[in-house]
Amino acid sequence: MATPDRIEIHGTLTAGKPLADLTWLRVGGPAQWLFQPADADDLRQFLVRLDPEIPVFPIGVGSNLIVRDGGLRGVVIRLGRGFNGIDCGAGEVTAGAAALDAHVARKAAAAGFDLTFLRTIPGAIGGAVRMNAGCYGSYVADHLIEAEAVTREGEAVRLSPQDLKLRYRASDLPAGWVITSARFRAEPGEPEVLAARMEDQLARRDATQPVRDRSAGSTFRNPAGFSSTGQVNDNHELKAWKLIDDAGLRGAWLGGAQMSEKHPNFLINARNATAAELEGLGEEVRKKVYRNCGIELEWEIMRVGEPAP
Image (tube, rainbow, N blue to C red; front, side, top):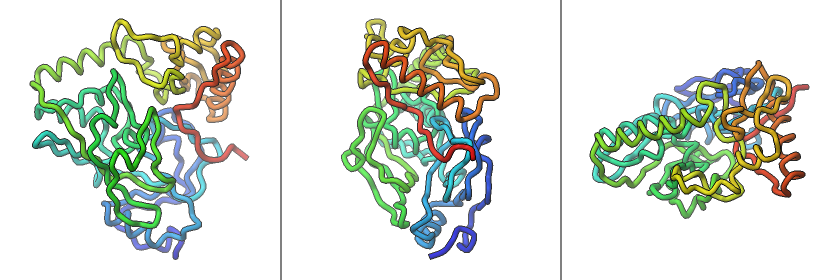
């Protein structure tokens, strides 16, 4: 078994790579190692040879992530061009784990397949599968046929939704496993109709969410156990944003971090915040919401790494 720098690769290996540039919140210390494999075989061979004591953390496009200011020990794996293909046909859409959710929705719609629920979800397919992403009443679990992944030991495996135990904003994907692609079932639809639906979804998102701010999407899971349906009769009583708002925390600040005025379940990097300020504000929100209504909010954003020394 070897350290990362002693393994022959076809991709790129970088020591001490700053991760702030790779996350939507633009915070975080360096990765001890950042590995960007050329393809699935490159990834497999790397993991087969990597010392099993060295931790591995897959990082998509960093859309749902706070990397703490001290950075991440071990190997951060970021998939790129070798994993972003999108193929449509026979009622199915296959997408690489690095393909952006929005791109998959658009390409599927152009081919006459309905995966429009992905259009407004930030991030890439690997993360969408791992977190069972969803909105407007549809989830990855409703469409996923199977995902392909590479285990921490370098074995290629196929995973069904049952294997992953997909549920609201969660799955049982083992630590260190890297999703490489996913195959979805998609209903047929007229491309023009699907395109119009996505435009409507974008308009609704832009009207209610701080899309031009540095955020990581929804900060906390909805205690209701489901995402917004987008319907006029949607019940908001157990939505995270409503609980935060009721606790008087819309627009709350800590250092350079703020809970958005526009959507109080969005944590934003408003003034060059540190990761500690962002996480600290989130924890303060959790405490105050609990004191206000007795409900303990659960983080939806992943927080990883070590605090600054």
